[in-house]
Length: 364
Image 1 (spheres, rainbow, N blue to C red):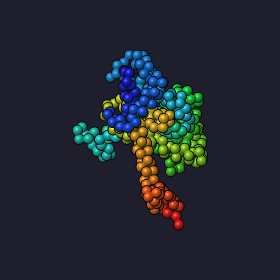
Image 2: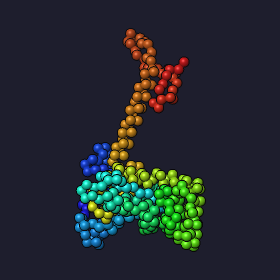
Image 3: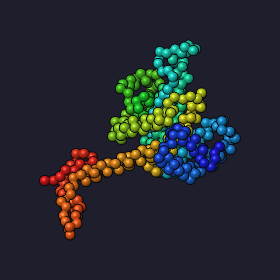
Image 4: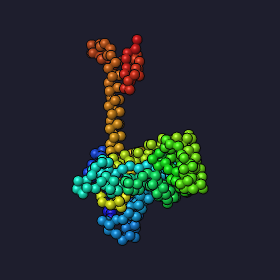
């Protein structure tokens, strides 16, 4: 399962850090030393060995519970380091792309329509802590399921994960875009003890028609939940949460799906996709922990910092040369028939601040 050189640690980080053989040429060893320090300091190898021994499985048979346990372990590290807050969580989803995505397509190989083909695809749904950027739940759902149909499942998983890592009270608020707005979903989330800040759709509710469909008593509950959510969305705190909702879940998708290579999945079955997603998101969360503790989360990021430092050094050299060019030498003097060159003497100058490198010009 592991060896002394941190093979399991590299496997756990996966594509969120680098592909095999592409570690940063400069500073990569420092990042992996920091990563090894975090993993060994929190007993990652011992944790995995105990989990594997308890489930009595081999490497090729690792199940979804073990992958979820690794995910929870990373959340626990983030909570112990004071990074994960877990009180306000944003939920959003993204489609995992297939080779074809046209709604009118019919597969030539077996004649399956787009609707039937869509039932075999999946979407990834993330619940992200908006105070730290840590993803607290990553679920895989069928692509034919709407956002409102999966919202309560993902929110419940996120709340349980937050409480498992020792955050008292769990989640207090959930925020989402208008694709998740449904009266029954809002009422169910509020029944779970969560404040909701779900953007509203541009349509009016016909409560009389709702009462005829679900009954007067349930209509009153749905209307009360709707109005609470309406007040929250229109408040200053709700507007601030919507801004964070537009930032953090999209950033997690960019790291995991685009940079991390999870946008297109090549494993079969929803269960295998879920296993891969757990490890990818755990690696991204571990990168956030590294960034918070050491200021850099990837070897490439450390390499970029060195490049920025070299650029700053070059700019300083250029500015110094420009300054030195404004100096003029004094005339030669003879002392005891031996030439003496007086060192350069500065003349008044004024700095021109229109250029970031601070050009200099002689004063009058």
